[in-house]
Length: 86
Image 1 (tube, rainbow, N blue to C red):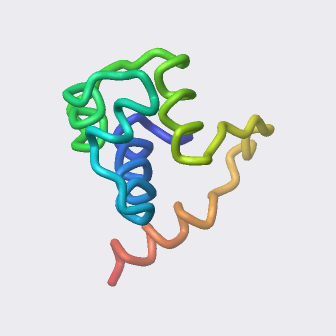
Image 2: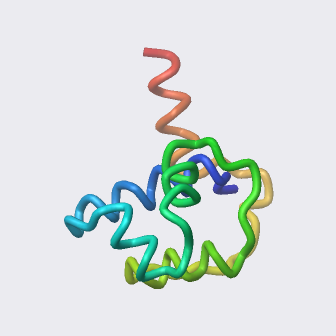
Image 3: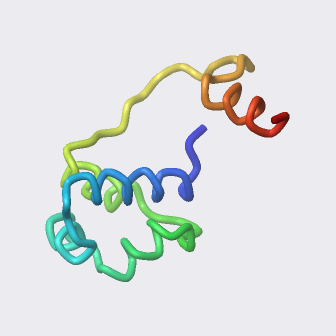
């Protein structure tokens, strides 16, 4: 499951790749720049679906609904485990 800290890091990565400032993304998404900054830096405990959806839409991204992996590790889990061992 993707947590808010990881989501914020991915949003920051995508924003930078698009050469967009935090202020520009915040304006396009209709959220405060301080909210976006806190999200990107892992200091946001909770954020409503509507705000997250608007931020993602402003970056050309969307949520995707899918079935849980039923206990099987994801590729990200396996990579993290391998990195931890090394």
